[in-house]
Image (tube, rainbow, N blue to C red; front, side, top):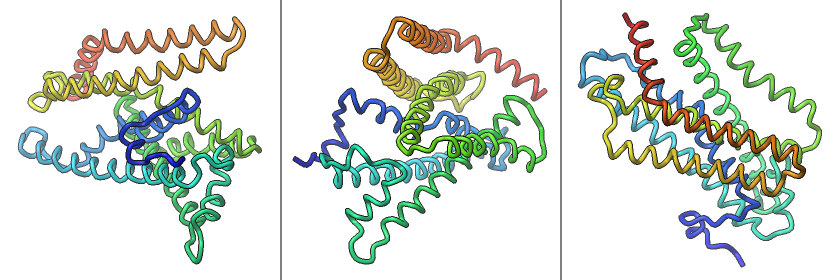
Length: 293
């Protein structure tokens, strides 16, 4: 029986076998480095930060830009997911579809006549790869120039940040011959991005909630409640994935103990960020003021 797509979109039902893919989708859509990037791009507007109306105008237009961009990204991911669900749910091909052969399956299923589904899929993959690499490069640029205070020439900075993105990809492509191995690796890389999101999100929420940092532009209590709820949801999803992986995949006391230590370290660091967030943000405020003075 074909699943009810509208109901599945609004009220998704996942089994333990698909939790890894679901968490991976969260990681590949949000991406922790984009949390830094979206916070930094607003600085590209040439305004006088001492004039409140200019800052509010910049924030308003940037909110529109980022909302449109994220909405388009969400719709593209939604369309891809629903097309594959509509075409291959419950079929024998469902378990063998990966990045290497997805275009061929789509062409055979929906590419009747002159509709070039295979080429549309290829262009989409190329655009997705370029978008991911560019955002990673921009995020690296802001981190190098902001947090690390590394002032380099633009071409050298672009070379370094692009190399960090491209070189590992080339190495993986050369040494992984199996498409199945590449698909599994891609899934776990997306999961890793999801696990890293709280490390960027918690300090960001803490900073934008403080009047010493944002002044009159700090977020209100309602927005704080919403953002902390979203962060708690992400942490809960990641924790569930780790526990599910621990219970289903790990065999033997040694590997189980190592994973248990890793899970505890992850949870402890997140708890540390939450409890010590105010103190850490105060230290960052002092550092920022020293740089500006």
